[in-house]
Image (cartoon, rainbow, N blue to C red; front, side, top):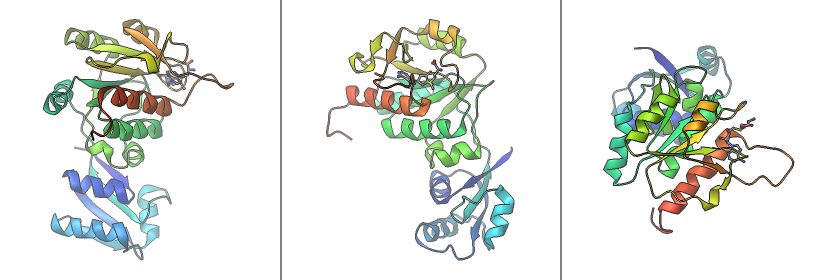
Length: 249
Ligand SMILES: C[S@@+](CC[C@H](N)C(=O)[O-])C[C@H]1O[C@@H](n2cnc3c(N)ncnc32)[C@H](O)[C@@H]1O
């Protein structure tokens, strides 16, 4: 199994808390305060090896200065199976709510989408194997640890997977600034797959054709689209808003 570095206090804390296998943690000298102490306590409690090193050592490991004095080498992130997503929905007694990402390439966008997926109660994310970013250290950091809790499935062919999911009762909501239905009018009281297009091209033709309806977020200014992760966040929270009574957590 390969390994990855995860960088920063929150991602390392979440990795330990979730039980993700950790090889070693390096802590920058002089960083022993607040959340770093929490990391040390948890590492001790879980028998994880850690070492204090000059900050330069950390920078040489990860080739970055944005590490908050902490970096861990962990087992590479594993992908889930479609079945895991259905299981998560079933455990929560909810209609499936999956995200389908059609060739998202920017790791910050993927991390941010995973973070909001966790917060808004989505049951998992589906990405294609080709022409898309996978679960990397940068994605883990941008997700601030949510990568540990949101199952991500990688499939060979998104359009084919959508066909398979349709047979299992899912309806697909495509998203496009030129879509014909204002997202505030959509109802989400059915098993739903929310499809987000790539940063450059939006949804591919084949994936778009598989969608049952096309939602748009109003654009009142001069630019023609939102950032993919911003659009995904608004749409995920609309699903939560429609499905959950206010006051219920
Ligand atoms: C940066 S946009 C893609 C722009 C691309 N040039 C296009 O024409 O579709 C990335 C993705 O974010 C979502 N998105 C962005 N703005 C949106 C909007 N106003 N309404 C619905 N979805 C939007 C869509 O999923 C879109 O494919």
